Length: 340
Ligand code: F6P
Image (cartoon, rainbow, N blue to C red; front, side):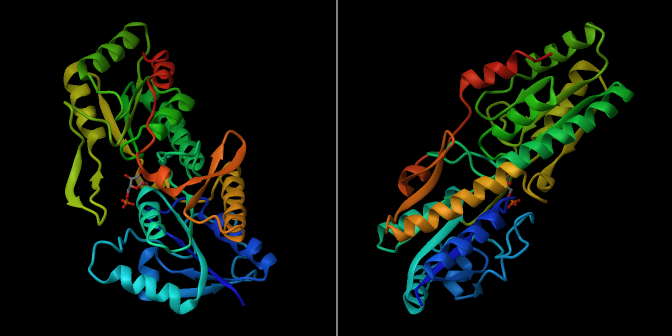
């Protein structure tokens, strides 16, 4: 029986299980066996895997997270890991590997593919910052969760006449904060792509309050920069990324100090990544999974499935990981229309 492998790497996100299910169901139509490697690239290095069949993927469609587990393991970090990974690939006689991940996991996939491994990529991340695809699954769910949280903050902000600062994930891109902020009617949205002028933020809030409003909501992306700098922990992960967090608190303290309005800060954190995927993310994950197996069938390796408009296309993996996709000025300008 011919075999293909699948792994999920990087931060988890809602929609991964629909992809796994779709890959298994589509591969079974070809008569292929699917090996699910545990915890991202770690499972391929350590040869930890499970056999996936119709039975094992039954009921996982609405579940958040990934039944395979995930990690931020970088096989190019430790000497010998890439060789172990390649030897496991050969030992199983894999026809191909479906790598499901964001810029880091797919960056490794792209490199391994250039070195000759038959790999296809599936883009995932709540951050929606992957190049060469209009959307990644996970993003829609995260935006909806963050929007609902902003709705909830509105009622308590209004009752207490407070400024509520809400810190939203997204790494170095402001997509989640921008869309959740717009959908939730935030009064100011701060994102990494455009520098924060704290005096301007305070002026917007004061102007709003002078018009009779007694509360404000400020949505801040975790990667937004204050005085040109991100707020982050010092420790780096295996791909050299900082762990962002703390900008909400910093912005909140400055707003309270400069305006005199009582201010509270909420950090949404991993709530945005947990739980059941929206219908959009289930369908996108499913379409990506089916298409990934079709790419394997056609031997179109070194490619990533991608959403362009309403259609599923494929693009070179290298193109997907060459740079991140950030928010453009025109879109941010739409949000600015509603500031204050
Ligand atoms: O990339 C997804 C993401 O949730 C980012 O928005 C966030 O900065 C990061 O992962 C958090 O990573 P971790 O789960 O390792 O804390």
